[in-house]
Image (cartoon, rainbow, N blue to C red; front, side, top):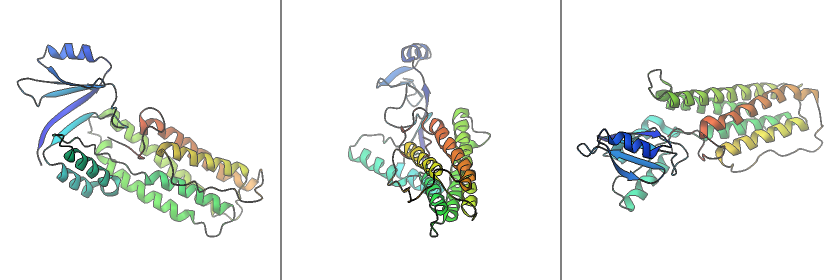
Length: 279
């Protein structure tokens, strides 16, 4: 597989000023969609630079674009390296759609993410709440183990982004922030699991409401949930001293999930629809 061109994408609201300045260096405008403008050198067409306000076709703004001569091989190689952290089927759909329309250069966004991490956070919280409510079949420990395994795979997938030599400092900082907040989610769920295993622990209406807020926070990050799993059992007391420790962990979990909106989406919550995103 050969690289044909690498195009840096610069976030800018000053398209005209950029065109004028880079025109002094010999660049000419070759594409302009309003939100993105590309300049190229007439003598060396592969030498290009793009300026964009924001990507109108994706939930994240790419910092560079890379054109390769074999997209299918790229998909296969990414599948081998990143595994479940890559939505390979969605990438293949993009490839087929572009080729079916005979668009020439096939534009494909390879995005590393795994929405199962947030689903695991949601599932662990709901299962722990059921256990605290007296459900003997609820097993939050297994859900917490699933979360830890998924986080391990995500750390491996994001390792190139957080490497000390990565020159994309903003992207690296964002990846580190996401990992730190997900680690905090894992820490809080471990604490919640430990509390759920304590026979003196219990639940109350406050805990149920806090768990519902966690469910809403996950739904906001993912753009939706297949189903809401929290239900109110009969006879829930308004307050119970055995719920205090669980409440502390659920409140911390809620804060971490709300804080994830900024680094995951780059702007407003709900903009991204596929979990942990890096374009």
